[in-house]
Image (cartoon, rainbow, N blue to C red):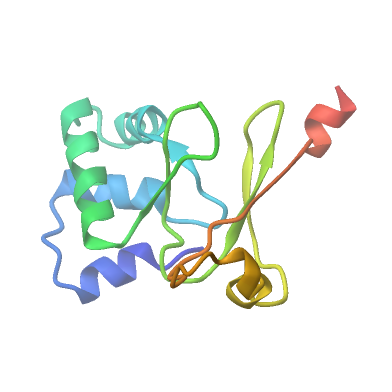
Length: 138
């Protein structure tokens, strides 16, 4: 489980019923839902929640730095509550499933000086691509 709800409470984030439901839907390990998926799951818990409220809440969580907006391909953006633990993503090229991965090594140091072109590197985003077991079995 991620600690999203705990982090939000610690920040004193105003926890309305709608915001709480969105945070509950996002809380967990390997969660990478689209806004529409968040909305569908939130409606199951709180039928009166609107799509606009879900989108606004997601935008606020991203602005706060509590949720990452992940775009791994041409598909819809996904929302990742694992915002405070460095990680990369493993993406299925067929179904788009995403898993958090934690490879060893330091990708910041792995780029040789000759390939930095004078840039000061501040962040690295790596995406591993492959085929998940479900798609491979199909």
